Image (cartoon, rainbow, N blue to C red; front, side):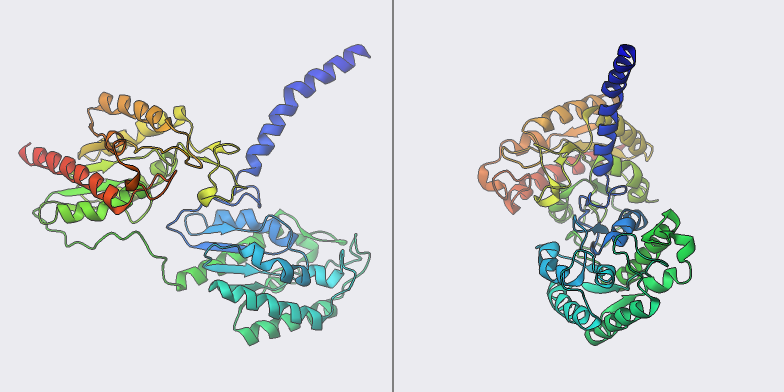
Amino acid sequence: MKLYINTLLVFVFLFCPLASGQDKAAKGDPFKHPYANPVDNTELPRVLLIGDSISIGYTARVRKLLAEKANVHRPKTNCRWSAFGDENIEEWMGDGKWDVIHFNFGLWDWYGWKQETKATPESYAKNLNSIIAKLKKSKAKLIFGMTTPPCIGSERSAKLVVTEDRAKEFNDAAREVMKNHGVQVNDLYAVIGDGRTKYQLGENDVHYNDAGKDLLAARVAGTIGNVLAGKKKRKRPPTPKTTSQEELPNALILGDSISIAYTPLVIKKLKDKINVTRPRANCGDTNRYRGALPKWLGDKKWDVIHFNVGLHDLCYRHPDSKVQGNRDKVNGSIAVPLDEYEQNLEKIVTMLKATGAKLIWASTTIVPEGEAGRILGDEVKYNQVAERIMKKHGVEINDLRELSGTFPASYFRGPGDVHFTPEGSEKLASQVAASISQLAAQRSND
């Protein structure tokens, strides 16, 4: 018996922490956990999913299907019935800007779970009208997900059968409300159709197996994708249009929002001397770099490539943080640890060298004290790793960290903000333009 207990204790100590760590990691992955809202890519539209456990089941799948197309969020709760939704909808929308809101209420209204006063088609329609009036304030494109079918038998919790006729009464009421408000309907009821025995978990369960979740996710993602394709694209970084002159050298700037701010100034400074451009995107961290770099490079012949990556790598984020970008250096996890950053950057430099361009590495700019998701001095550690790699490959270094470290407080957008005022960006742009101009001249003399 004693041996059995000791063996059990060893098993618990060895394996429980591991499982706990895996669970924690999964809960932080937006492609696995519905409540793990993503860190927004500012170049992509924002989508909000509102609904009950059916939508919770397909949320992570929709995120995967719309990866690189939209930032897909949802409230970190089951949105339950329509009256409950009417009370909470404004909190769920928050203050953020939404491009598309896909929403549903219905199953809870049908079955009456946890409600003292049971819903009727009339009360349901009244609640939906009120919800839509509040949703319209967001200026988002609205899509109503028609409620999926009831289970075939007596639902295991409510202990009642919702007939297809009762479901139709509610869905017809919803359809009429949406028609009156000009809200698009995504008919998820029809998607399941006669497939309840195939897709639902059982005769007494309204929820769906993996095949059912995949089917619903594909329909939701497809509907949202079609709407986004028809909307005007969100405003991109203000990179001036330039007329490329074939006889001039071509320079590419790669980097995050710091470089987005100074790129237009560099273009202006080097006008009629060098064709300067950048991807119409925030290049993010080294993981994103590695995947997107071939697209950013394209098939153009580059003479000079000025690049930086780091601020996104050393940022700590937590899905529950309310700070912009989910930044949280106390409770969050670092985006890309230093050893992984080193491996990624080595591969990035190798890919860039293959272009034959002259390369300039811009060191990561200063992290000011009080930054919500970044630790003071971490940029120095990441820059030291980058410096070793650049020296190994013979890459020129433009030390923007040293320059930004001399900036007065008035050059920062605010306390604890890594971004710069126009005056700060102007200083950075001057040094960037000078470094590009120098290497472009060397290139022409080679």
